[in-house]
Length: 169
Image (cartoon, rainbow, N blue to C red):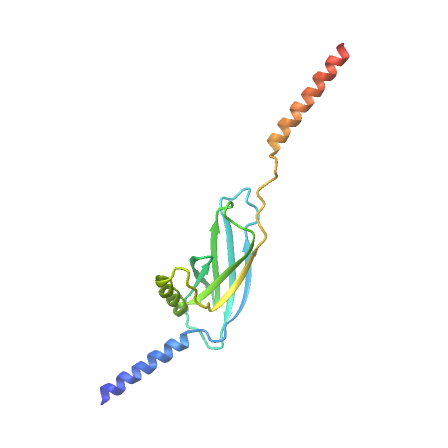
């Protein structure tokens, strides 16, 4: 009888602690940054920092995961209830527009992985979704200055030689 009582108390404590670990009524404040100049970099960086506030207190080691356009990422903890999600892309593949960041807790991440085993296109409702606006990256002028200088030099030389031949004629 005592063993059943201890086991049932253990199950109740385990279930209540697992329920307490999930964020209830999540509220988020986010700030996002991207690389705008692709002339001197080899990768475009996307960084989103956010503060997560929940109705219940979260443990110190509360892990969050993120998914952006099918890419799995981890959310790095950078402070108390502050997290950061970042990734990079090649400038040729980096698209302008809104990037949707789906943030999941451990339970949601496990559910997503289980669902993806059966169907690679499966989705799971995220804990929260953050939108990152990337306006696009500047890749330089349409015509490089070296080409423009060469073209202008040829034009000046042509005009000078033409006028020289007119003067001597």
